[in-house]
Image 1: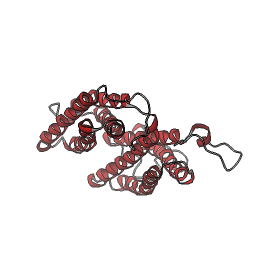
Image 2: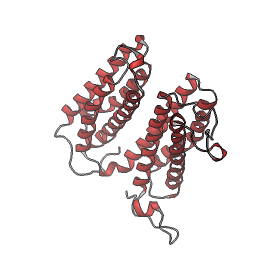
Image 3: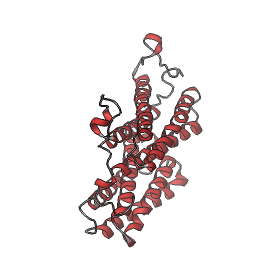
Image 4: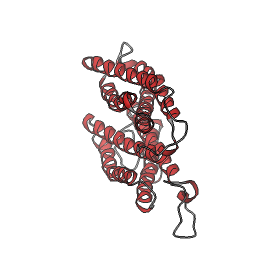
Length: 291
């Protein structure tokens, strides 16, 4: 299946015609990830209400469209990038709906992501006007769901070009990222006050890398391998979700143990995945098995 050879309905070559749908989808995924991380930065620095509870405006410039200080800038820039991410989400969904050579599974995933986007925007507004922990949590998990939908869709469009070597690389990334995630968590360190905004931001960046590594390993591993080698690969994504869930709550001493147990289990699956798939993947793309 080709995503790059598309006959345009007009003489004007669009960005999709020039670069291909996979590149549009990848760009959208990057923007969604950036929006999540900027949202974490705004929360970690206490900037959620820095724009004086104005939404979508801020607290300076013509019509209060610009930030007045550094905390306001964090929140304003988060909204700015989120706006472009929203445009990219809508564009990706409409393009998938329109292009006949896009996998229908991909279309379903990105359209669902588009439908969730207005919900996420509404929740973003509520984080400014109310800023309660329940709304913040729902806003975050909706963002993660949208990210996951676009991540899976992106892997699907690139799957024919990915090999067993990419599975090994994804697992190696997971093995490298997981200890960093634990070291950056509130579990390691004596006081919550030492859990700085930089540590929080870096930890969530590592979390997204873990989620990406697990999904790539599971989807491409299922396509490239068979038998017992697939089992740890398929176990990795739900374990990453467990690590993410308990990691967000790890400031609570009662949840430190579940977090560490989930982290150890995830590390075991990554190591087992490499041990079982090493040397068993084809170096050339194969469409013999659906991802």
